[in-house]
Each structure stands twice: as C-alpha cells, then as structure tokens.
Picture 1 (cartoon, rainbow, N blue to C red):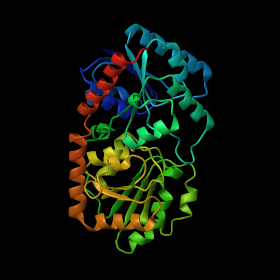
Picture 2 (tube, helix red, strand yellow):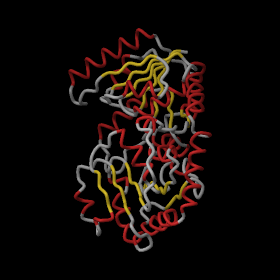
Picture 3 (cartoon, rainbow, N blue to C red):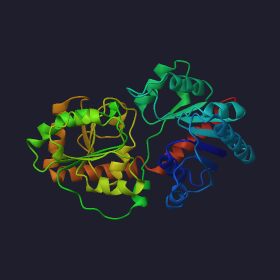
Picture 4 (cartoon, one colour):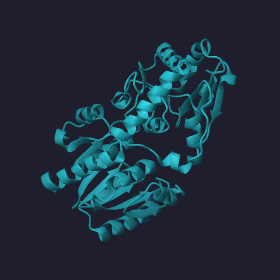
Length: 364
C-alpha cells in the first residue's frame, strides 16, 4: 500500500501521524510550509518515510501556486501511490484533485463548518467541491461525523471514519527544559478569534479574583483587534498579554508554568490545545461544544462548562486553582488518556484501516 500525504497546514499533527504510520505503509509526505524548523523537528519526532518540503506561497499568488502544483504533481507521479491523503481542505487542493483523478482520495476534515465570525463563501465552495470529489473522510469526533452527514446528505455513513486527535509532543521536543508551575496562573493559548471566547474569560476574571489572590491570566496568541478585548479588562494587573505569534520554543514554558488551561469556546470542532495540555499533565476547563466532550472527561481530566456561562466558568477555574491535588490528579489522568487512548500508534492503525477500506471497497 503506497500513500502520499499532502498538507498545507497542521505540521505538528502531520509529524505525529507520520510517527503513527511508521512502517505500516509505504509513504511520502509532502509539506507545503514556511516552518523553517520543520526538517529538524521531523527527525526529533522520529519521522519515517520520504519527506518533501515546499515553501508556501501567498494564497492569491497564482503563478507561484501553479508552479507549486506542477512540482507536487511530479513528486506524486514518481511515487505511484494507491491513495492521496489531504490534510484539511485548502483551496489549492482542488487543482491537485483534478490532476489526481485516478487515485483514491482521503481528506481529514478538521472543521466541518467555518467557525463563528470566519464564514466566507469561497471557503464553503472549496469544502463543497473537495468533499464531492473525495472517497473517504476522517473527523476527530462522533459529533463531527454527524455534523458532516447533516451538512452533506449525499455523503454515506461508511465514508466517514472517526479517529481521535493525537498527542502534539512536538512542543515538548522543541524545548525539553523544566519550568516550575506558577501559582494561580490560567493560560488562554492560541490564535484569538471571537469563537474562542476570550471575552467570556475576561468577564469571569472579577468573579475569580474574589476567591483567588495573586491571580494571573496569561493570554498568549496573535490578535489583530485586541483593543476590543482591552476595553473589557477591569484590572490589567491580573493579566499578562503576549499578543504575537508564539514561537514553538516558548510553548513548553507557557504550558508548564500554567496552573490550568482554559478553553471558553463559543463553538468548536475539536482542539489541538487539549492534547498539548495533556502532554504537559495540565487540567483543562473547557466549554462543552463540538466534540470536546469526547476528549475531556468531565471531572476526570478536566471540567466541562456550559458555553458563555460566565459564572460556571469562574467557579470551575476557582475549583481547580484552589485544589492543587485535584488539578494534579486531572492532569495525570489526561496524560494517561493521551498515551493510552489517543496515542499515534492507535491512530496509525485506524488510519491504515481507512486506506485499506478504500482500496478494498470503493470503485475508483
């Protein structure tokens, strides 16, 4: 079985998947990425198989993208795969799909629909076209499978496979230094968009501060309109704002120093933040949205709260900040879950099953 994997995003996830596939299939991974450390990271992650990296042009640069498509085409053709696996649903996958009509196509769908505030017609069109032209779909939760079936009634149940999101050990490998947990520290991490609910956390802060002394909320992630959030902050001394792209080397320190990780999302599919938290043995407080409840075991690895419920969010965070034994127990349970139920070896086996099913049962 020969597989070509093509990704424009999700570098860390793909490196983990490569580890999980290991020697299970003959494979070539094509990364379209501007991550200058990707080659070095692949060796640290135990990457197995052919590795090709191309620089990612701006999405609107027609000429450079066409040249890139031609290069990818010849890389794939020389490998003679049985299946092409697209990671995500990038608009430039459409011409690639047209060029690769004779191959089986698998797509990992990270977001069945656009997040609140990020809806764009061209993204909807891209998703529709690629899903029409694909044979198998991988999603990271049963809820997401049902959403995909509801959104596209022409997709059949057996075409969709639920495979969990695996560990993102990449960040621990990038910086293996030890950092001590800082008392009463909440970490909100990642790109800041409306659907992630930072404003809900800010509204919860005064309630948390009534019970927790020396509270510190770390907000680490890029936001072009952070002024909208600053207007909501009542006590800036409670916050450390890192409004920038966070280098990979700094992520390990942020997670290790945090007491608890918070995801106050209004809406979500799944989250790569949770596997990072589990890898660093951190308890999480997260909104019960999307397929997050399939990864966060309520009152075992974290606490699930009703979305946009400020009081519930504040109470859950206070509970874990006050009780060190509980958050450490949750963190240990999350770490155990990550490497027993969500490990890359299991994910690799499940992914190979998808490939085999396509080869055996789909007439291409």
